Length: 218
Image (tube, rainbow, N blue to C red; front, side, top):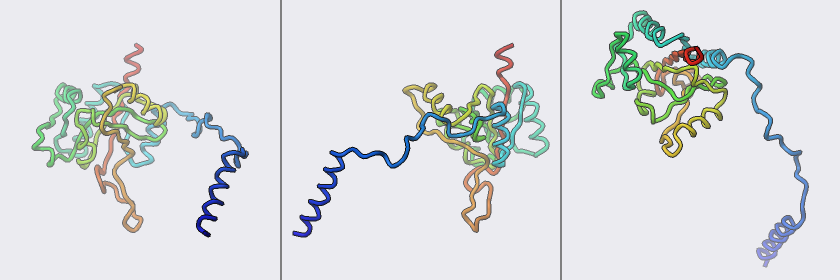
């Protein structure tokens, strides 16, 4: 009997709530105004600043030729081993510059340096968006000790929502099975709250940004 009475009381309160309109306890929320502050720096500058904050390395290049010249310099200075590259566009640039690389899948597990392109560069976060539709697929983004990313200024977007909208438009009905953000080198502070780089992936991240917008407007 008590259970029935309690149930009836609950149902009565529900019915009353549905019949009687109540004012919302909070004022109407403005969902149109931007959440973040407006960026005052150009997209490339803001991206570089945010990337460096998360221990990423930023390299600006005026052209494809300057990219390969700087890459050669990095290879010599850091004594990098041969690059692993599956992307045909980057492979062409490397061949033209005489930079050796390997693309044999059997050599992948021995590769310490991987180089890929990206989908978009998110200026506010200093993050790189990649997807499974890019030539390397998924593994080069997470396996090598150092991950080199080639991007262009035309791929810069202000926020994550712009990157998602752009990738939706780009692929339409052939949406990638994986879309991911890379924000600096892999890291963890799970053990004694000590930050460790390279815990679950590359311990170094380099973004080479090529200015292709001057070429488009000239």
